[in-house]
Image 1 (cartoon, rainbow, N blue to C red):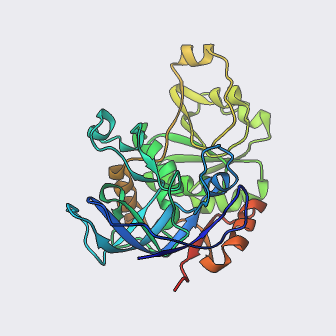
Image 2 (cartoon, rainbow, N blue to C red):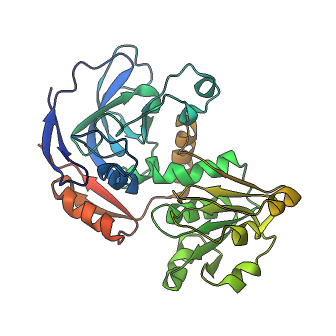
Length: 336
């Protein structure tokens, strides 16, 4: 059956109605009837071929929510009618050491759902059952899409770094990623400090879960926080005063980067002498994603979203280009 979608034919091109035949449903795959799909900045980067790996025609979309419409042979844990979500990865090998140890997101051959194949700006999409996660009761399906990329991107470091409720964590950037990090960390029980170049975001940062707010352009304020944080989560894609932020870490503290900053340059001795570390992570495994959804349901956590019909996808992409979303954009499927 033909899949209806919106695709660009060239780098940076307009998204136009597009149809394709996905072929037979493979063993182990499920087909999702899409109800909504979030828009991530990665969709814009892929549309523009910023990472030089986009194939055209290109159908963006990797923050997908919908219902199972069909299941292939050997699918064991999903059934038609279930409400599910799907993020950046559509499958992994399931046999390498990373997959076998539960770190499927680190699989060297994991398939990105918009890398070499068509994504979720469509009425249907397919993926391996292992990466399709049921939504638990209490998660709002209408706003859940961004959890499957932005949400797991900021939740995974909490798990990977064994962050405790007694820890003090800083979040750099209050945007599409950072606002969800504040909500998760506040509910986790941490003492949370928000860093932003926008002083007018202080009140909202506190509403989202921050206990403290720092203007990240204030070098004196940054210096006054020496030896304060167990983790700094960087959720922006710009160059920072890396040495300044490393200086705010406690011994064994971690500077964890999830925003695609161009580069990191830091003095070595503060890392060595304080046993501090710099790291990052790509999204999270299916198990960690399921844990995130259960935690979100328990604490009523959802992204702050704006909604567009899929037919207005180019208007939504233009708003993303402008840098003015608050804070995530979601497309509602209005294809026949």
